[in-house]
Image 1 (tube, helix red, strand yellow):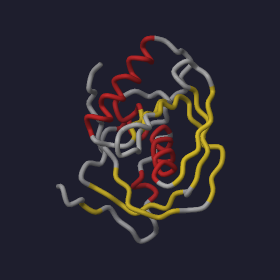
Image 2 (cartoon, rainbow, N blue to C red):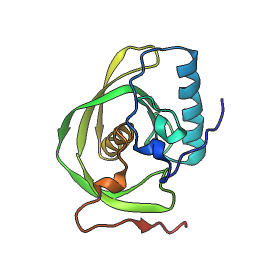
Image 3 (cartoon, rainbow, N blue to C red):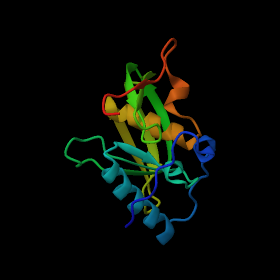
Image 4 (cartoon, helix red, strand yellow):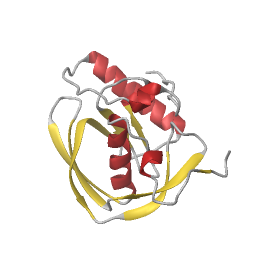
Length: 159
């Protein structure tokens, strides 16, 4: 496994649409394993393949405090949304920044696992926010593009 470099805001790959995964092979498994290591090393809750320079529809995430809810999503599609939540959002590709974004409170996602089998997931609260945020990355969209009206990016206290 390896820690991959996370691309930041000015990198043009972050604005490109990722391509579907069609081959479930060792190359994909290596990407998934590297993304998992990179996610945990970074302290983030989600990571999309374009953030590590790979234009494929792959996401890894774990929104749990104890890192017990790790999920791999290949070719994810959000197929249902309910309610709304407004809150601060950050991104590993926009280090030191946050912004207020409204997202659905609950989402349902279908995605393939590393074996190519289609699975269904449901997320509420932070998990729903993460599903939306990471699938946006696959479309070349950053959360700063979705800031609520009148909102702007602000620095986090760590920076």
